[in-house]
Amino acid sequence: MRRVVSHLLLGLGAAVMLLPFVWMLLTSFRSASAVFAGFGPSAFEGFGNYAHALERAPLLRFMLNGVIVCAGILVVQLLVAIPAAYALAKLPFRGRGVVFGLVLAALCIPIQVPALPLYLGLARAGLLDTYFAMMFPFFLSVFAIFLFRQFFKSFPDEIIQAARLDGAGEFEIVWRFVAPAALPAIAAFSIFSVVAHWNDLYWPLIVITETRLAPPPLGMLYFRDAETGSNYGALMAGATIITAPLVAAFLVARRRFIQGITMTGLK
Amino acid sequence: MSLAIAATAPDAPLLRTGHAFAAPAALLLALIYIVPVAVLVWLSLTDYTLGAVETRFLGLDNFSHALADPVFRRSIVNTFVYVAIVLPAGVLLGLGAALLVHRRIRSRSVWEVIYFLPVTSTLIAMATVWQFLLHPRLGPVREITLALGLGEVAFLSDPALVLPTLAAIGIWQLVGFNMILFLAGLSAIPRDLYEAAALDGAAGGIDRFLRVTWPLLGPTTMFVTVTTSITAFKVFDTVRVLTEGGPAGASEVLLYVIYLEGFQYFRIGYAAALTLIFLAFILAFSILQAAALDRRVHY
Figure 1 (cartoon, each protein chain N blue to C red):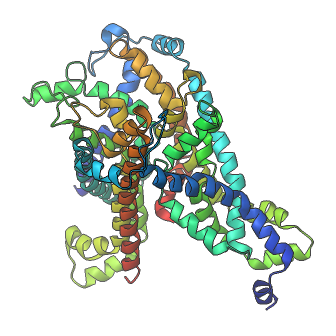
Figure 2: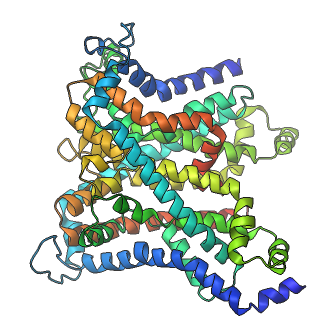
């Protein structure tokens, strides 16, 4: 009896969770005349709406932009954060306390705070409407430094010492021994980073005005404004295309995704 | 032993490596956080506008102007109304879902996937779908409101309904996230505590929940509460996509007003002052979080 009730409640919640996804898919396969047929049956329209959406807006270009921006951000984030986290965890250097204190302080500062001065600086440098402008504020992830430092701290000093005695340099120690041992944390952070930046609207909205540079959310905004009130089938097909990559990746790597995105809460 | 010596007497090459490894991060820290925040503070004291010929020093005028500005005050009220809806509903529904899912053994992963789906999906795209769903004349939700005798409901264009509607979409997006955090908290509660409680005479699910689950979930609940508050406080995407602050300013929230002042009207000085007020709120939330975590350590 109890089981039935809890399944019933969960099912009800799940219906609300899934409603927009079901509606999006349903409409994307309907002809314009059947779009308002509610949840009732209607003729299968095939991929006509998808073809129309791809024709009306450079959706694939938006996705390519998303891939470029997310990849660029992630690579630099890892290249900067891993050595810095190792230095903070294992290397004694002057100013270590200050740097770590600043990292902790920066953890509380969302992008909307430095956005104005960053925008003015990029404008003065003539860098607005570039991939660089979209990526620059995120090259440093203080969260990555904080997280990796926690992991690196528990790496055994004996192994580092032994490697040093064997003649390994610090560079080699970081990338050959310490970072691979923290691979689960690095993977989780990577998912967190890609999801965050694939879905980010605020910053691209500010620095990008050219359609051809728009990442998926901004592209969706342009597409929506162009299609308003006219073609819901194509709009839903576009939304499906934009949402599909992350949802597909999520369904494939379920555990890692959940772990990566909620990591902030599990540390 | 030799390790201890190595730690107290670092040799010069190691020191240099430390600096070299931390240097790129320190440089970016300066360029992305320190210098911009300093510039922001300076801008907030001026009447700087993009393209203006000259800039005057205003002192704290921007701040006193903000406190008297009806648009800004309304945006603060709107933001807090939004938080006041999203926070309790987001936390309680997340907790409820976690309690139900936690006891399911075989179907657990299916529920997790379904509830987590909105967290990973692109909010801008899904907001567009919600707009269609809620459309007073074209959307399928119309069938429900008509069946309930409510008639056509203009969810996004009725000033009284727009914030609750945006909040509902916000809740839809973050319940799965909160559920996962609560699930982690629940699996950290040792089984034998429930047995001990049963021996102590705790009968029934509600008794067990009040005596064991709820107190032990304290730190998780605190954490979820603060993250949910911060997320809700930063609401922007759905407002930009669905209402642009309307109707008649009924959904103008803090970040949206800052965005308009700074990046649409280019009143940079004023926007900088508003940004600092925004930062003050965020820092207050963070301090609350740190204090809460500190207090819970003694559990």
